[in-house]
Amino acid sequence: MQLRDFKEFMVHSVLPPLLGVAFLVGLWGMLAQTNDTLPGPVKTWHSAVELFSDPFYRHGPNDQGIGWNILNSLQRVGTGFGLAALIGIPLGFMVGRFTFLDKMASPIISLLKPVSPLAWLPIGLLVFKAANPAAIWVIFISSIWPMVINTAMGVRQLPQDYLNVARVLKLSEWKVFTRILFPATLPYMLTGVRLSIGTAWLVIVAAEMLTGGVGIGFWVWDEWNNLNVEHIIIAIFVVGIVGLLLEQMLVWLAKRFSY
Image 1 (spheres, rainbow, N blue to C red):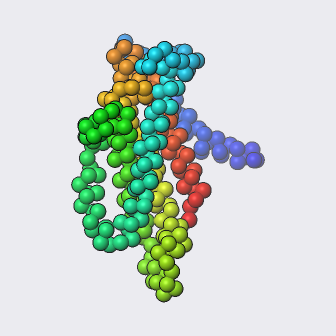
Image 2 (cartoon, helix red, strand yellow):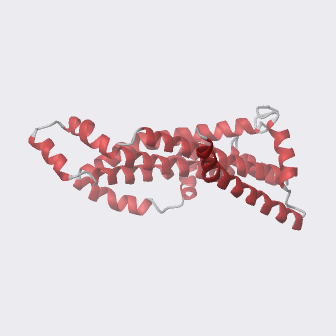
Image 3 (cartoon, rainbow, N blue to C red):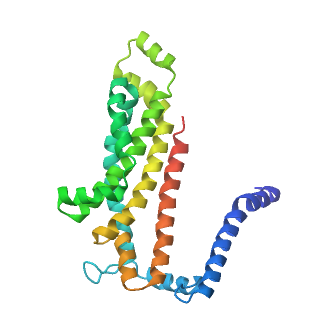
């Protein structure tokens, strides 16, 4: 990389995010100066160094390091999100492919999609009789809709000429799916997956606050009960960073498989 290209990279790609972060930290510091109950950036940083010096300690079933809490939350998100993808993506293909099924599913999706994710939690607790599967259920029901809707939209965007040619060639439904539908729908499907993982990670924090156990949401609530505001701020940054990494991973995947 030449010196000019390096300078342009620093000015256009590196400097703006750094200025944004500096502005956020500066604003946070000024607010901390005017409010005695809000810890500042320096105090929170020292607390984070101490917290992450031993993130995987165990002092009992409900007293574990932040590393275990993050891993438990990711496990719940992975299970609920995986089940949603396993059902939602094939359902999206069928809804987009068959008009009759689309008309059947449209009122159901329109009715259930706007429902708040936490409204499903009591149903999960009633059916599964346990907090962990109820939290997974909330993740599942919250993250399935973007995958169904975006996958079906991708199928509908396929030019009719492609399907007409497939009909003339008498291709089987499986070949139509593998040779035509899947490659053309893949960008839409991955967009739905990316939206779903963001929703899943957003919902798990609120669900764990209500269900308890080991998880980042319960950890935030427990620190609030202990009036440990530094740890709550750290948890906010951890949730944001993990969510950003999950989304960027799926963005990278979408670029790798762009059609």
